[in-house]
Length: 361
DNA sequence: CGACGGGACGC
DNA sequence: CGACGGGACGC
Image (tube, rainbow, N blue to C red; front, side):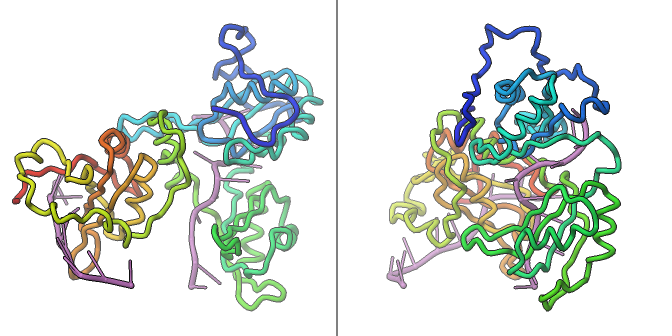
């Protein structure tokens, strides 16, 4: 991984494997898991780390500030899926404990807000680990579109100490979606906010807001991000732009050819799924509500997708549980199949393979 | 448990 | 109407 972006003046020298010393913890946690009071000024939590960043890259970056006592990137060991994909995905946050408090303070001043890849990391003091700080994240909806984050923060500040406040915005318009999150320091503060503000109409607004606990970050979030998976498995791909969503109406525009549709003998098709203009992939166990964009999002990161199709029941218009994706290049299609077969989408384990041709012709 | 589509001269 | 971030406390 490259460390780029608006960097601090210290170039974070990547640690040379030949020069590593016993100083490296290498994932083990020699320091106390629960920092004592003396660690409160040296122990940092680092959030919003890029998915691909390793523990040693974090150590390297933070060692440019001062001597690091210990460093731990939190990984999800439960990302199995028994799909052959790599497990132990980064959860996007970690802890860095410095030897000296002044270095920890300097790290906050220097590295907080640093842009790494497409992320802006947050560096702050880690609070002493405690049950009372868990589950303190709130989901807010019905917010007035005109409400800013500072305004939201001040509305909730009477309930307790706010760790984080965020309003979601539409990606294209930049306008508020009326939905946001507030993380309090303590769970009791979050409970207080629900009691005091749920259903209340903010000053100057006309509609009540909804305040509730946010979903646990375990439901769908610790899934392996498809983009990261595709990047990891396709190192030759230089560019991996944002997932684009070609409207379905374009999807088959260039595919149709008068030579298609039965003129090619099936004997030439047997054994593979080459369909004149690409490789057709069978996707099974889709939910009834599945739309085409789901297939674009799943397969797009792996390469050129020509078309997607969700097969629906004619009467109900619900997905019949399967669909097809046609990709241009064999290697990309193979990578997508190997990666997405066994992938858990929602609560369903997908089965993904090349489309067979041994059905009725 | 389940299991391999459907298509047209056009905005 | 809206709807779960940028996986926040040691996975």
